[in-house]
Image (cartoon, rainbow, N blue to C red):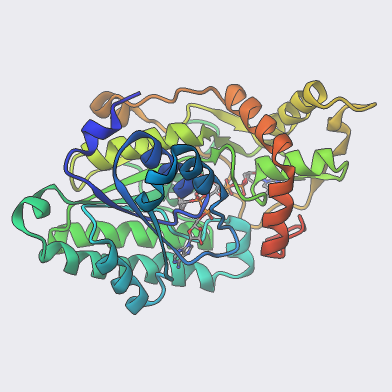
Length: 366
Ligand code: NAD
Ligand code: DAU
């Protein structure tokens, strides 16, 4: 672990976009707990948004902390809302996480992904560029814009090899294409207008507070409801799983210490097939909440995801050697914490699913 307060140095006012989402929420909780920074949370409050986790940290920290978090409800697809929010926050540091993030939804409804991820990033860059240019010299010099992206921009690997900072872009879903476009925009603002940016491309995150539409929470909730656990295709697709708190470490290090204009790949060294993940969750549930049979009997192969990327794996050597980052949790340790958390927070799962009008149905099946 590193000392966040001393690393933040002059970055007192931090704008986090997408802070009502899964990873953005984890970033904000870390900033509130481990620094004195003022956090401005720009979020449109979409279907996957929830502030219960942030609110509970504020409650723990006591009445003096409440003013350190301010929600700026704004849609990045609107240029005016974005400019107003950036002006309001007057940031020293921007951590850009807001995006439509679910591959299956991008198959059903790609337009929203272009609006939020491409136009949204463009509007944010425009607003931040204007803000940065007007800053007094000392704040201007220490200012940073950090764009949080995904390994999916690099496409799909075969049985061997891994993605690194040198991998060519080859996105294959509407989601990953929109994230690739946003990476290119951020890069171009650096080269053309001099905006001080850093980009990270991370692998699959998991952990508490993830909206229950992604693989791990879906499996946990389907299993305990004794419903079929949907395993796409043959279950042999591979993802590189990373516990969300470890991603937060990495992205904060890159944002604050990374070389400007650079990108860093962040992965968990946690390559697993989907079949392994699903079976492991079932066997941990067998221990934590035993029923008369193994939860694995609910696993059901279903029609594959269209354009399903076969394998992702990350070579994190650069961020390890340059910034000293390493994941602190193994996949199995993270899974145990995550499963316990979901078992203790089933009410939260029901509330957020009801609010979103999502009831565990299959998404992204053509
Ligand atoms: P999430 O879907 O849980 O949260 C995204 C948040 O962004 C939501 O609160 C949503 O309301 C907000 N948002 C979306 N569009 C917006 C808009 N137009 N204006 C304002 N707010 C908007 O996503 P997540 O899993 O927390 O992912 C966060 C970021 O990290 C994304 O950029 C994603 O591409 C990237 N990422 C995610 C993973 C992963 O495994 N989840 C891995 C690597 C990178
Ligand atoms: O790699 C980083 C990416 O990881 C992020 O950029 C995305 O925002 C994030 O959603 C995630 O994308 P994936 O498509 O890999 O995650 P998802 O949880 O949707 O699926 C993980 C794997 O599990 C994938 O191979 C599809 C499969 N799957 C998924 C679901 C929801 C199933 O087999 N059954 C399911 O019900």
